[in-house]
Length: 256
Ligand code: ADP
Ligand code: MG
Image 1 (cartoon, rainbow, N blue to C red):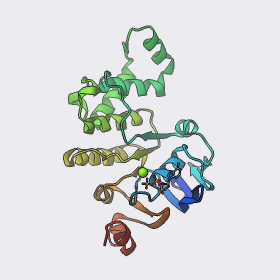
Image 2 (image 1 turned 45 degrees about the vertical axis):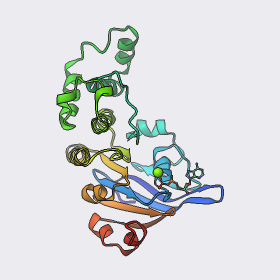
Image 3 (image 1 turned 30 degrees about the vertical axis):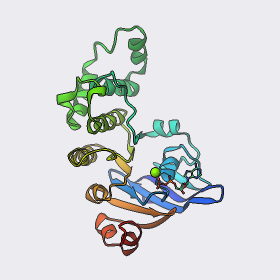
Image 4 (image 1 turned 180 degrees about the vertical axis):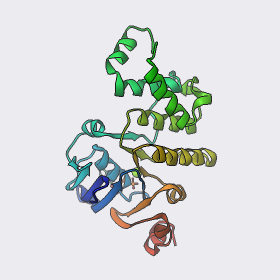
């Protein structure tokens, strides 16, 4: 593990009964980097994602976040330490607007007490203080959500919902975001927009991204480093260029 490591998994093994879903897998997510995790169906991607996010406790091995051992820490504890995640199927409120979602997340970060009074007095999310407005506007700008900020989620295409999910995750100011198949269900234009946004986010903020993705081209395009799993074993790791030319990857994953 390097000094600038944000998250690392060290020799993680996960067994489900007799099945070895992860066999001594190590990965490292440096600060302010984009790391991709790819592999064919059944390779162990979701299992590793679960181990890193705190939904699963590995059979052996350790997970370290900012040098703290979080192998057995709950998802909630990891969130408090600065880990945020998005879901493969966005979990948003269909009647709330784009802006409401970001305001809610900002209040969870900055003014939890006021969030509850507003919600339970039925006054709605009124009279935001200037600093809140500035933070929310900044996220809406970063994610390019300005034109749809006042639309209800239920009226928006999946591509926009993904961006809202990313904005909401960023509002709690995480140092690491775990993204579960962020491009699934998106068309080519939506995927390109998401890719540009994710790169911009890492350029502007002290945050690292780790994402599990089936779209290999997307991963090779935007990641600083890529890890490839196959049958629970890490078969390759390196820069996109190295991965593209790796014979084992081409054999296992690109079907060559
Ligand atoms: P991927 O996300 O790369 O498609 P998974 O991590 O979902 O792969 O699965 C890896 C292997 O572990 C598969 O063989 C899968 O059937 C098995 N597996 C995953 N979760 C469980 C579980 N809760 N119980 C038993 N087997 C599981
Ligand atoms: Mg999976």
